[in-house]
Length: 123
Image (tube, rainbow, N blue to C red; front, top):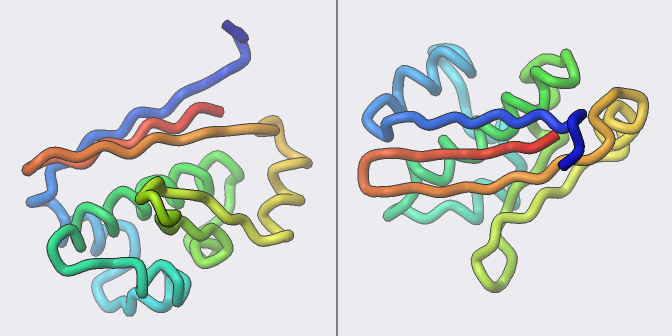
């Protein structure tokens, strides 16, 4: 295994949704300020909080690693493909930042249970 790889594991309670959203995005936010139209359209009512939290945690971690603000969240799009697998699409601006950083490649995984959401991001 490459010794330069780093991982970030985040597990959070779904019940902490409101606090996490407020702490990360502020107390008055509109989803469309931080998520693309495709991401908002990809949400479903049954798993809304799980999807929002997992995607938010991934965006937050990538931006933290690149040392950029939440203003770039819309530059990172995570939607499910036709088989239900979350896929990542990055703007050219973000791709350039990644290429100029130590974070050349990364992958992620999302999991959830009734009460928890977990994300694993490997850089």
